[in-house]
Image (cartoon, rainbow, N blue to C red; front, side, top):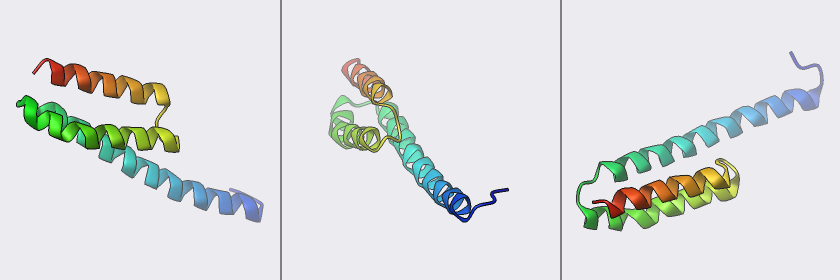
Length: 83
């Protein structure tokens, strides 16, 4: 257990940040899953900007790595282009 007041405070802050990061990451995964389930190209193209925007925001905040964001976006583009 932490012995210093600042260490206890960091534990509390880290827990709240961890929960927020998990929420945003799960939201992103759900959005990606939903767009991959679409079978009509037009519908997927309408949803794509919002999902790409979400991925970019998470990358900018540091929740996911920039290369992972690029790989996710690339995979989505490939999936939509094959429809």
